[in-house]
Length: 365
Length: 273
Image 1: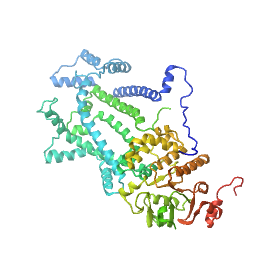
Image 2 (image 1 turned 60 degrees about the vertical axis):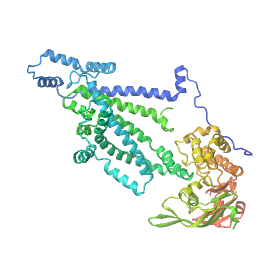
Image 3 (image 1 turned 45 degrees about the horizontal axis):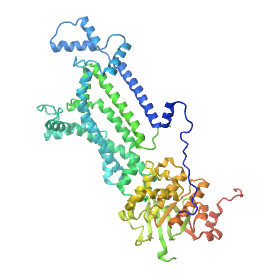
Image 4 (image 1 turned 120 degrees about the horizontal axis):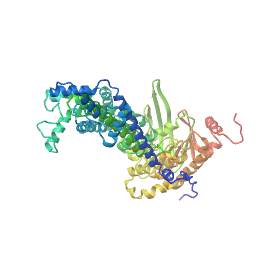
């Protein structure tokens, strides 16, 4: 079409030139993303090992003799008045992995953990293993906190994006100031207000336990309905505060992006407002929210101690508090290990996911 | 001044102010200017002369504290009835954009969305204003890229993978994608090196030949106007001091300010004083 076409701009293609010697290296240099993933997963295992090791030695520093506590508990529970024999104490020490020096205890603990997924017996629920105690609480915590966290994130990011987009408008100002005021109110405070209104004054929602104790747990519609009903108040208290804090942070990320040249350009293009908001503004600022969300999902596995205690919810938080009170060190360590595992795994998944979400993110060379 | 139908744009007494704590600052003080169909009109002037404010006001992209305080801008798009650009709002304005009135920003600015492939930045604007072209996109995008001297594979690239000159070409190709009546180019060669500048100017001239678009080119660089424009309008302190045929203005500038601007062009073999 053009009489004399302008010179064609040549795209540099010499990315992988000099062929490396060995086969594996050739493959890795051809697949930088795979090489990065392998390196990142390797790092993950190093991190995991380091954190579990630190946790193990740290918990051995807790003062107090867990075996004495156990024997006292047994004596009280079974009206057992005799002094414990040295053989009995030795057997318990053997069972709880407290024999030998600290290093051999550590090796034994890691061996059981890695090869058998065994955390050792729980002190207060002896002889039930700690992993069973934790697994009993885990679904409740994941269900309550996981769903609440996801909902809070979705509501918060959408509302925060709109609040940033419509900055200067009355609605946005109200949402922003409300968020500033409410985002740092503790969950349990909102929980108490909700309990006061819905459980105490109106009496429409239950405020204790996770389901109606008259219903047998199972996959019945009745039981699921009961779980949802009992989970509403604790869930709501987390969602409300969580939403406000996500609104605030999303708005904060959104506002600087609105001044970018590509937003003016998108407006000049005559695109629809909703499209500019999602494809141009939000798309360029939501990455930190993904990272923050992943990390917050990881922390869910700690349980939310205050909310679970307040609603007497049988989750990990409640388990952890009871375990600490009773010096149940295998359970405490187990909950800690799960938290370590979940936070590190969440960060790993995010690191692998981010390059797919933003073309500018490149960890590899 | 001109026959009405021959003008794409008729600016009458346009005034733009920026409100500050110390009162209003007049950036554009009553400008009268016609843009003729098919011409390349250069807007010259030093920094702060109001030429960019003029462009932004015409594109209706003026943001607070900027404010249009007077005048009218009659736009005559082909096949549509004339509209006053300063009086259209909302959906009416949005529909007018790009298909009739398009914008070519400075390539060194981050006008391309960093997280979208080049082809998607063509696609969204084409589909927004001409949804019936969905099926011809695969042919259209490489053709537009070729028009500005880019390979088809650029379509699959992200903005951060392009050089400044390539970004400028992509922006040019997007600007003419819908064959608009008027393209307003704001400093299209600024921050590019001299060789690339020349090529970009040539491509702009070709676009006029190929697409018959009317171009309004804002630049502080008199060299750009000498090479590209048919007519040039010189702005100083928010006012138009001279409008005329580019040869005539360069040969015999009437206004002393225009003379100074022309003399500011560096010449080979002359020492800087």
